[in-house]
Length: 158
Image 1 (cartoon, helix red, strand yellow):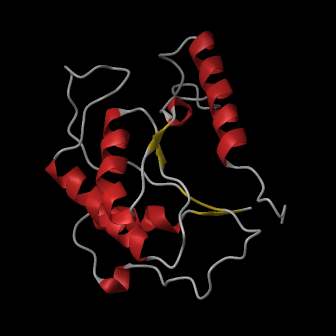
Image 2 (cartoon, one colour):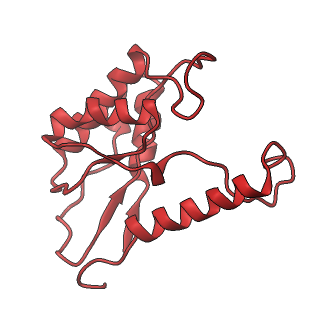
């Protein structure tokens, strides 16, 4: 299984402002064989904190975040890759990012709460200080389930 994180770098440069073609990574020379599974992990677009938003769903994208999502969707659509799924968490800004990306990619968006943010167990003592053991355990279980669902071997098991 191959997981590409290069898109996160592209998103980071696009989210910081307008990227030139020199900022973009080179395109793959060949399309991966049928036994290769490639997973692109994309963070949601920019948003402004909103204390009135539902704490389980969080605030939505602002104008910049919507523009970022459209740019990323267009970039992904231009790749010589056939995407077979587009799935977002149930967090408002993640749902909106996927919804703004989907038209350029000619895809429907699936939702999965397994992809929603949580804070897993950490060796950093301050990181889990605001959580109880049940919340940490629930997050650990959620992340294990998401990994098992999305990071599985390709059909050819290469």
